[in-house]
Length: 173
Image (cartoon, rainbow, N blue to C red):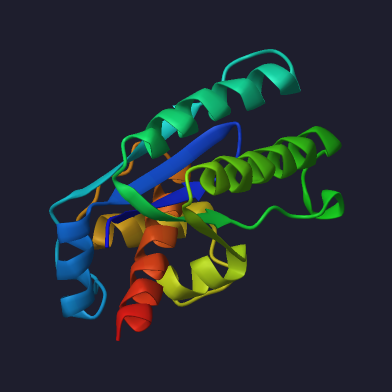
């Protein structure tokens, strides 16, 4: 099994990746608990999708994501489920989220990599215990596990990575 990639889809894109060895250690631990410290082999960060129009942002993401998947170190991609427009802060945000989700699926398919979308409430519940957790609670949960995310979006991606690692452990069992 190769590593996994977790994506918090927005114009400020949070990402987190666990390599194969990290995923193996994580699964043996049965997940991370607060205070246990970060797992070696986990990288994370934020990509700000530049451009003054939707096409430019989507193209920026496409180029970044295709480069990540071309590294041949990812066997599965998990991403935050795109919400319908009525739940987004704007129609533009909904277009971005749905466009990014389409790119996630298409590029993963092109690289023969599986992908799974995960509802936001599921990520929050898994990481903080509260399916309605606020951004600052996600950041605190990440810090409690020993990480120092550079943004709320990276914290969300770490929450998704934590949840995805548990799903991978179940899949391997």
